Amino acid sequence: MTRSATIERITKETQVRLTLNLDGSGQATVSTGVGFFDHMLDHLARHGQFDLSVQCAGDLHIDEHHTVEDVAICLGQAIDRALGERAGIVRTAHAFVPMDEALCFAAIDISGRPYAVVDAEFGSDRIGGLATDLIWHIFESIAVHARLTAHLRVHYGRNDHHKCEGLFKAFARALDAATRIDERLKGAIPSTKGVL
Image 1 (cartoon, helix red, strand yellow):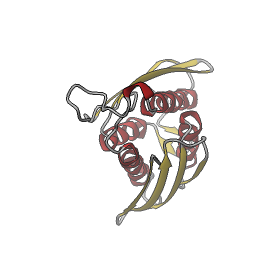
Image 2 (cartoon, one colour):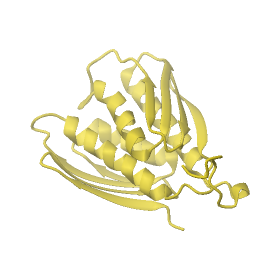
Image 3 (tube, one colour):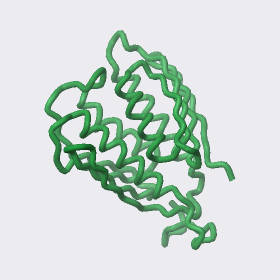
Image 4 (cartoon, helix red, strand yellow):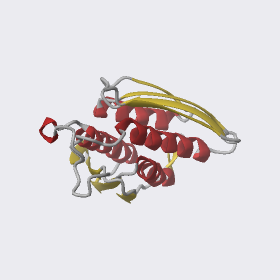
């Protein structure tokens, strides 16, 4: 069974084509026009062992908001579609990731119930071409469209780049662990409801 999906989203603001393979090897080809966001998506693929291809042409002459938002929406939709009925998955997982002086945490429940809590503070308005207030929005958009619950926290850190990178790595590792197939389930849905 191939757990992959391709999502296309075309609006008056962006044109996005995103392909995700949950059972990949960490290969990423990403081009959004927002360099730091590309860097974070590359980390997501490599640390989650997902194969990820993203091509986005957005209205960057305005700002990066629509580009980042629509890519995050597509990523969430791809996760949801690639998981299918979510049969046999581990479902919940967490990860701590140190990034030099920063320590970051992510916990995920692929529950079918979208929710995101992002507990992080940044000292500057921007990291490269990415507004730091979009970091919360990225994870919220992924969680809503992937239909999962995510709790992320920067426990401490000084450098904004390190804090953001640690969050993406922790999210990637938790998502990788939660989406894995648990052979003991023998294809059952990991819920007393019988559906996720």
